[in-house]
Image (cartoon, rainbow, N blue to C red; front, top):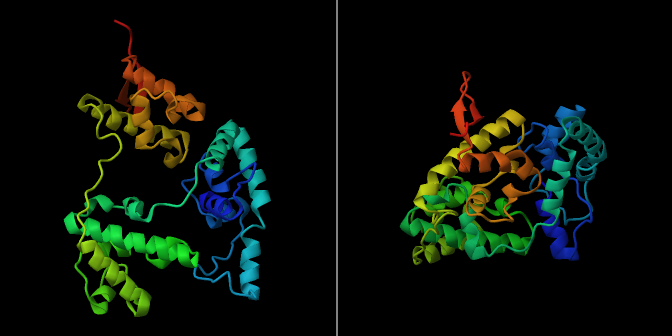
Length: 304
């Protein structure tokens, strides 16, 4: 999606576009699940675009002919894709929903991530125990700072899988580092390998606790509601062919259950699609049942 572009514009220009149409986000309202530009072009326009080289150094000049062709192809079909997706959204009655979501993305606060907190964004980070958390924090912080210094995405420096693998072993030599899951030869050799091992050593000296996840301080009686409503939201996403990632996070649901008047599920297109159903469930005016196909359905409960 456009988040990385918006971050770059904010950092370098101090501004973002006045209008935004994110093709990946918009496609999520038409049945796609976080599609890449390549898959959208192939599905909607029958265009097979070049994957390019993800390790290309775009600061080096002059650009090669292949680099120029790839860069042009990355934007050449966007207007046509915009028109096709807009037509599909209009036919589904969801254009306003998509535009609202794009505006939400455009105006979302941006800013640099605190390197010392970046480890909490690692996938499966909660499987880490004791010392492994300190190593994950230290190595991820190193990755954030190195990526910022050379101006590349963090996963080009070291993938999440490698950090998780490194964190679960007390590595101390380049040979051990090279054998760790997800680590490539370029990571283990030379200055980079030394920096990673130094970060590991620093992490082993730390005592890091895992923060409580959002909503863990909810009253115990509300926790079943979170699980039940989350299951219904997933069913709505499947039935309505909307990317689940667009509908709601656990934090969104917790905010609504706490009575937050500005909760995303209480307003806009999410409120229209989900808010009333959730309120009916919480007030006992509706229930959930499985139909003959095993799908979860919201049903009215008659007043006593």
